[in-house]
Length: 530
Image (cartoon, rainbow, N blue to C red):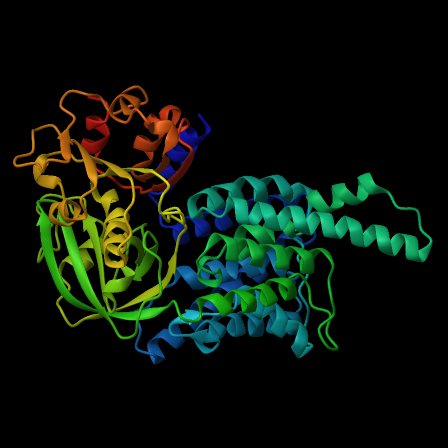
């Protein structure tokens, strides 16, 4: 039930890009804070808050547009708006002209840091944290983190949960929050004892939970994908380090920075793991491999470091981007051993194949890709993911792929073939029609057992392929086609609704790893119920 419900929520949130969702959440939080300010329930007054908002948004958007124009980059405002919205809550709102000048300076520093403190097109430090640190170091002001208020705790928690579910950072931020709260309570206890004061554990814990900026720092700043390392264990390490430093502040030189100090140190630690991840990819070929699946082949200027099953985020700048934004995540189809070639594949709607930019209902992102010509360079902002095969090659596995969800599995079986690794693998492949079974040749060459779920019967199936005929792929049908499910490690890549439908049966597997995609065609979802 938990896996199914989680998958459905992710499916709904997946309709928005994570950048657009973060901006919407911060916008709502800003409105809530403004309303509360009229009743004196937060530190800044209404006029202070409004003036500071106007200054930060104007400065950040203006500075960002200027830098992008100078660098001859497409003008995009989402990132600068998010930076401005975050800084509203971590700087002290004011109407004093000199203090507003310092805030404006911090906003410019934050935006410029994305382009100056960067590595291969990827900023290293959280921009808002840089702006707050620069403000303190310059002597023009200091961070305030007034967002740490009991009346804002519930809105921050609720809106933050939406962001964390969408970005799949809930466990990481939860780790940070638990450690930060625990270390804070320990620090107060130690300092109280040293000073001879009475220590009130309940009051201290309550303050850390609801009156500290930990919730906001974790949900809206630590969770930023571009400043996190690719693997979950690395992300957990960064979260733990930031949690310790947030809970027990340490002075940096002559300056005692606010919570931004903990995050900046965590960013630097993350950079150790991400320094070789952002790359430039040149489009070499684009072709339709099924009536609705398009494959892109890139040549990397330098080897892309990834593990089979991981995904990359591709940046495709284009004008008038819709709510999904200019960046999209793609599971990598090629194997690490195929370097420097990198392949990805994605689904297009009827009439929106290669060379068509006007497919009905297509996102602006896919329309921009549809008209791209070989020789065009794109940025892969990084590689992430833990959708990896068991380290023990003798562990039996079950792979469940729906439609384009087959892509990470192709990378994995290709890499196993290249390394001479033989696994006990059963693949369930769900597609709307037999003609939509992508990468058949590669799957046949791998020799793994495949159970096909399609409306029509595929022709010329290999001996180790089986058409499931009338078996329904649901919580009851899955054990029927995979009797030894309980002995296998299950991996599912497909629409969230499919994962929700199979959740009760998948709970019987030894382990379960999911890679849910949003935006799948309804045909696959109907097929799983027909």
